[in-house]
Length: 302
Image 1 (tube, rainbow, N blue to C red):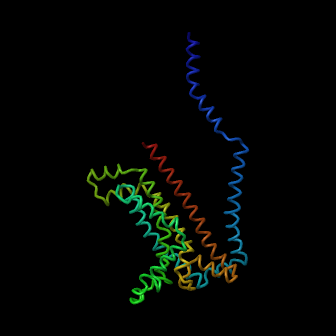
Image 2 (image 1 turned 120 degrees about the vertical axis):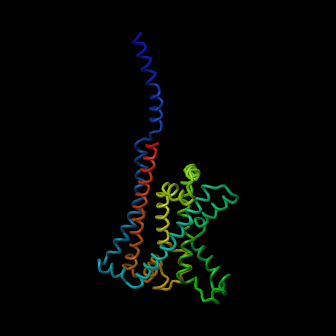
Image 3 (image 1 turned 90 degrees about the vertical axis):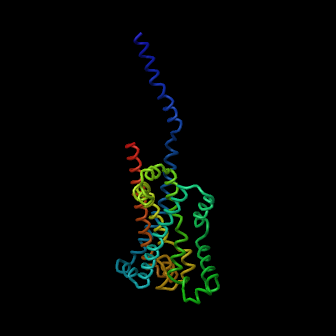
């Protein structure tokens, strides 16, 4: 009797595991498939990421560190670097404010035109940067809608810093919002509602409840926005006028040097953008790791 009971319990205990094993065996790909897919992925990474990056730094340092540093310290290059940093310094905080406000509105409230707002946020992803630059020419050019008024008041938008900043803001404003909207929608509004019921003000709720929950997604969006702002070429090229030493950003300065067959200097300046890409990748990986670790820690606490 005891033996029969033991056998029955053994079969009962093992039966739930058998389907799992069969499912695991059924979904396990053959070794050659996994190796082939891994090889294809690594080949693409080497050909389209590592080799171009290595080529940029190899060409930049081809004539030695003296030539490299001289190309970066050259007045026009230094002006392009300062203008790029200034543009990012203005565009990224403005996009940060817009992204938080837009994501808060979309995730926390229901209203007419919500889908239209989401469509407009995605607009820069579907419009060519060159077209967005031409839009500003149509608005602020000499023959544009506001051109006569701007000329009468001696206000310069195109071929100046304001035009570059406006074009950069346009092409980068979706990045922060698009990172935060799905995150805030998944979190819901229960914590904010509880804080308000307990007597917290709107600002107190935002700073002490909402912001801690979205901080890693917010940082992720800011990192991507900054990288795009500093590397933007198409829209800025249209509105800048290519005034050397005044309205050229780093990408535009690289193009000018390359067109002049000054390859060492062009690759030296381009290496700054390559370094930015590597730093962005490192920050992106760090933010993703921290976000995953925080989510796992919160689940353990629950």
